[in-house]
Image 1: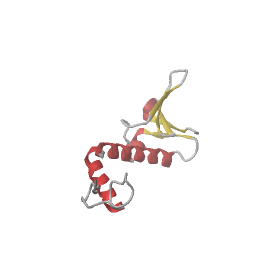
Image 2: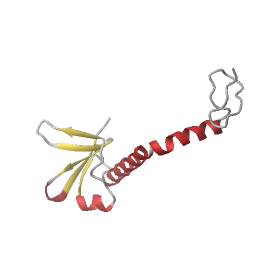
Image 3: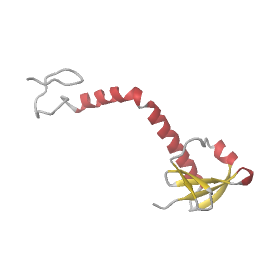
Image 4: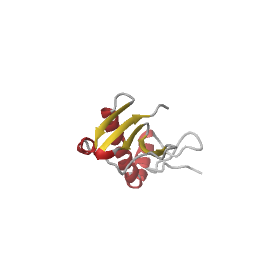
Length: 116
């Protein structure tokens, strides 16, 4: 039984489990399959990355304080974070990977960096 490339249909020579004739066809095939279904994931990851960069920029040390206005002006999206940490006292920290923030009174935020 002759195997053909999943992208271009040409006959495949080589290993029996090979699906593509070359790297170009493999990349083209996978890019086509993933382009529509992965847009949501790609866009969400880009927004999370942007949030992380903003927190990293404003908090180069381990902890600092900033305003909500400064975060918003830089394009921070408060709806996207990767985890929540609730302390024993009931304080809720929101984390974007290892960068976190804690809402304080008066539109201020404490920024923290978690060591992993």
